[in-house]
Image (cartoon, rainbow, N blue to C red; front, side):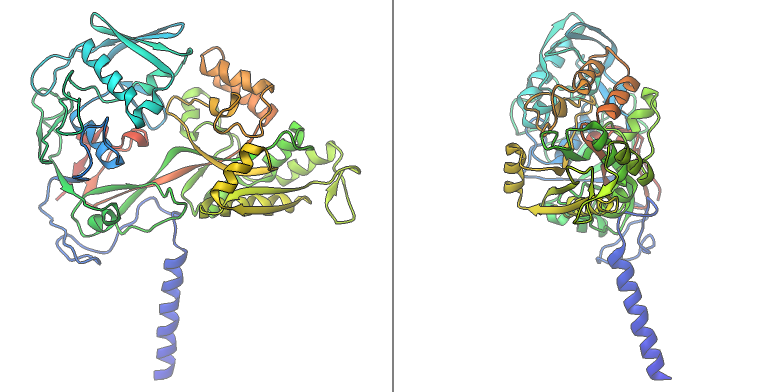
Length: 510
């Protein structure tokens, strides 16, 4: 009997170890530990049931000025004490904040300003917006986002932005923090803004009496984190209330806390070399599109840390554009039908699908350092091999991967790109674009993408052109995880670049 009990104990321990090992992003979008308020949690900290403040992490050695801050956490903090002209919602529509109205004409966009005051009581002016734009454009992080806005000039109570090309979604770029002129010159100190909080250089906060949302806002306190590696532990022991993990290294990390998975604007795709016959055939590329399983890649290769995508646009952005998302489950029958129609209806001596003159044998190139992408490449290779192709994976160091892409030495490759909030896809569709590897730039979809982004055609028209030409295969949009204390109810109505953007509406329970 004792031996049997020992065996049962061993089996139970093994079961729970396996359960922990295979747990990933899948399943419910919330997860919590079993710690009750006031008890010690598994990392040895305590949760104070009377705590009302939202405790946010910041790095003391990094700047609190958003135009000098290197860390995401410190950049997020800017929207406690500052506000943008527009805020991008989670469905990638723009919401006016300090903008009262906006109008486009050719390559200019003019914003009329709201009546607003800075925390020191001075009025917001067009000169403050121009100053903030110049600081943002000169910064590393915001500068990349503003690359296609050339300049800004004050026009009475309005600001005129000059664009390098027409942009129907330019509001989604006017999201930089507006700071009082002259207060954001250096990395030291905290600039003056119009947000619901006032942030002091020592990390203390107070409510801004000149902001209407401040009165109902939950108090915020800042907690110094000396090493980014300690951030997870700081949440688990109750020192901070919130963190965001983007799994950029390509693997899921479990955090013992409430959590919500948020689909970021990071597109994972299967690049195709149109210069390598028979991949110059749009029909064959379409067969590959139907032959891969976007749902399976999101749930398996990315362990649920992704949302399947049938179009290159963020899935949440489709509904406001009046576009229905295409199916993202594998359609092997449709893939085989297309292959048969273009002559791939027999097998060669190696048992590879052939049209009599060429066989469908190819490789998928991927950088070996990213487990999510390596798993994706293997998933793609397996799905296509099941159709009768012979597809293998080439997993190589990143430097080799990048060199081969630039040299055009690939058939298929797994890539990922962080797209801007204005839904700009030109990185694929202009010569020399950062992700244009292998794409024939004379395809109709290239001009269709430009026309759509300029506002000259609808999203549905662009989507139709994309599916006709199939320049690459969208696979999924990668997700990050917001992890937070169980007493906290965050607001996730904003895009992930601005998770603190509506922090005044976050609530706590004690």
